[in-house]
Length: 104
Image (tube, rainbow, N blue to C red; front, top):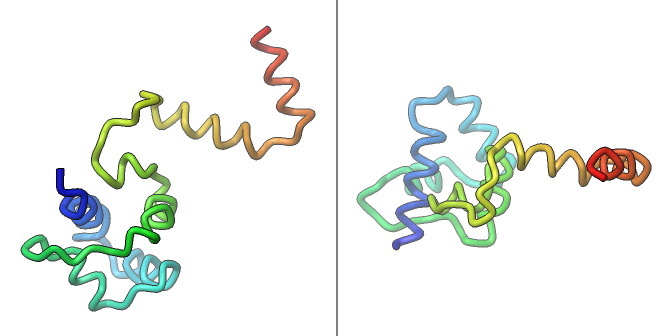
């Protein structure tokens, strides 16, 4: 598997044909230039974002690294389940205790 092409396809799916405000926000928040993004969206070359930016890219779109790489999540959790886990982790210890007690 060529992870570069998977990442490029992911970015193409997320950014191509979208309004410019999303692209501009993406570039601003992640520190990419328009030339960077054009290279990332060009499927005929292997230019890919630095791997150190992969977590930020996935987070920007509300996805996981698995989504970015185009591979199945080994935890096999739905998007809704992943979102519930994220919210649980953000909750106060008291609220986490209430949730745990529900499942006892």
